[in-house]
Image (cartoon, rainbow, N blue to C red; front, side):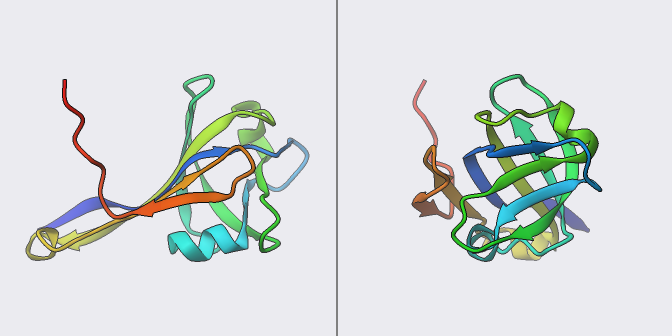
Length: 126
């Protein structure tokens, strides 16, 4: 049996553009795509921290080191410039691979600069 797991996450990315009149997708700084292992045209899930919207689109490559996170097309109704979002990609692995599996978790500041990279989410005490 295969299990769907979090492959990578860009945590608290800041939306820089929201372009309604566009063919769709989310343009993401190419450097961030490379670090996260997200491929151009790969399906991504986006979670808007500001308004709670959750939506699925696909990634396209923006200029490296541009800091661009542009939500385009119909999804532009779900995120505005300045909103903080979580961008996730998922993959499928076998149950046998699960015990050794580690995702790529990238944490960003308000300028979409990487502040840290992890491979697990620490458990927080209640």
